[in-house]
Image 1 (cartoon, each protein chain N blue to C red):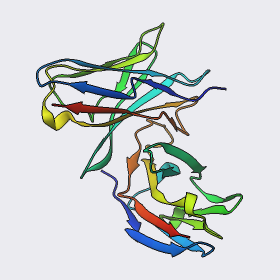
Image 2 (image 1 turned 90 degrees about the vertical axis):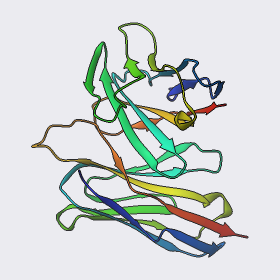
Image 3 (image 1 turned 120 degrees about the vertical axis):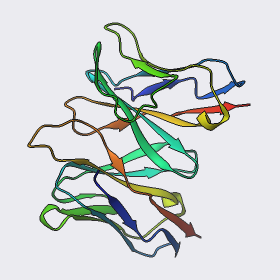
Length: 112
Length: 113
C-alpha cells in the first residue's frame, strides 16, 4: 500500500507567481489535511477536506490560499501571487477514519 | 486553542543510552500521535496513542489522558534516531473527530556514535 504522495517535492517560484501543490492520499483514505511548517513557527494546520467538501479551513490565510479535493484526482493546495513569506514546507496527511493521520514527504516551496 | 508543550527542547545522547520525551497538553483529546521528523524532513508515524501504552521495538509510548500527558521512551538509542520528535493532539469535541492536529514545538534529539 503506497503512502501519501506529494508533488512536486521542491518548487521554486518568483514573487507574484502561482504555486500548485498536489497530494494523493493513501488508498482507501477519504480525509485529507494540509499543514505548513515555517522555519520558526513549527507545524500548523491549514485545512481539512473530504471528497468535494472543505470541512475545516480555520488555519488557511484569508487571501491567496485555496484548497480542493475533487471527486477524481489529487487534492490541490493553490497559492496565488506568492510572497517570500510563503516559503515553507507544506505537508499533506490522509486518514481513513478521521483519526490517525499519515503524512506525505512534503513539498518545499521557495519563493525568490 | 489547545496548548501542547514538549520537553526537553533539546537532547544529546551517546549511542546506546535511553531517553524519555514528554508531551503535556492543556485539554481533553480525541487523538494523540508521536512523529519523528528525520534529517530529510520526512514525518514518520511512530504511535497513535490517545490513551494507554504501546511498544514498537526500541520505542514505547504511554498516554495518561486523565492527567493530560504522554511519554515517549527510546531505549538503546542509535544515530539513526536523531531528528525532531513531535507530539500532536486533536482536541476532543464531544466525541466528534474534526481531524485538526495541534503540534508541539518538538524535541531535537542528537545521538552521537
